[in-house]
Image 1 (cartoon, rainbow, N blue to C red):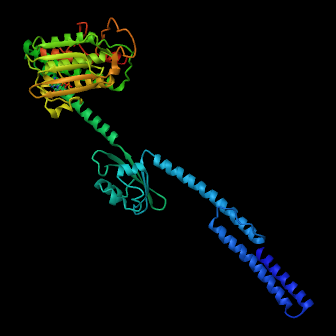
Image 2 (image 1 turned 180 degrees about the vertical axis):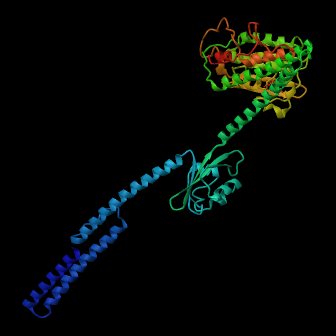
Image 3 (image 1 turned 180 degrees about the horizontal axis):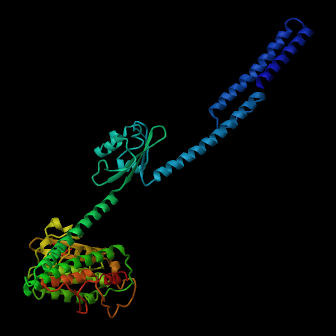
Length: 492
Ligand code: ADP
């Protein structure tokens, strides 16, 4: 023990002083004792000074000191080293936790019992418009003021999350939830659910649209069936019965068209394009499109075709055929008799290819143009229905364009006409410039075009007042659309 050792040294000094005093007499004993005490004090003061100097730079080794000082300083040094190691390990763990919290896909805000911000990650800053560390200590509700959020935060009922608009943004929708933890602390978890909400809205809208589209023909059909069922014997003339049946067939055809186009769209949206590299033989498939357009127009429109036979692209013939057919039949359907329609298949200056349909029809007002490719969007619902339209043709065309890296460009002027362009990039041209592949011979006609093409043909039939039949490229007709055929062709 340090104090015992020092006491022992003082005792030795005292004994020495007594001995000297006994030998020499006078004050000599006191002198010796004073000298020894001063020497001991000097050693301690010197070591204290060294210890103080070392305390300024504790990362260095302790000074060499004799006796208890040396031992004390070495123990202190060891203790400090251990603490430092523990501290750096804790710091490392803390950094890892913070990095993990920063990497979370959700926003996280750590709040105290008064909802004052203690910490938040980057995603929380982005979603809630916070600034960290500038906002540390600020009341959350002073910074995020959307009424829905404030009501939720003050409700203290946080067992379920709630959906609120993001502060300062009309675009973002957030799902937020407070999680109590620790000593009255709160964790706010924020997730961007804009996309999910949008999909959910689209789904709801889609179901409502489909129900609405099918309800009208179903109601008509049910009405006729009731009339036929309840009419007393011989109350209806054969002529009336035939007319009713024809109208019922029209309505059934309309429902078939819708279901068939929906199946096509769903196939296009849900399947991966299995593309066997090779030409789609566009000039050849345009021959079939031309036949359908001419049948639909029945000579009512001057149709001009400019097809560059040497231009071809890599793609799925059945899908392309359906997209081209849609554009051409739309031009015929929405152009009054006598209106000029020009169809071109040509190379573009950028090395790609484009399919252009220019009509001198009724045109489309600018406010509709961006929405034309939405499902069931129609400028004139009555007119579209009267000509056998489902409102899905351009949605199918756009989807086919996407699957072929193409762009669907629409320009139109009311009363002047419209231009629809499907522009394929240079990478889609066939044969590819980089390859010296021979141009493919003997184009293979699509054996069963997608139902958009079918529905276009049915639209033709509807105009003529015929049965809603499906025109086949070989000229034959099917009485009903066949969904299996759609799948079989598209998912090839
Ligand atoms: P629909 O089956 O109704 O024709 P589409 O998706 O093919 O459905 O077209 C959507 C709408 O775009 C049509 O209802 C029509 O109002 C408008 N439209 C399409 N093509 C033309 C065109 N060439 N001229 C004028 N309007 C057109």
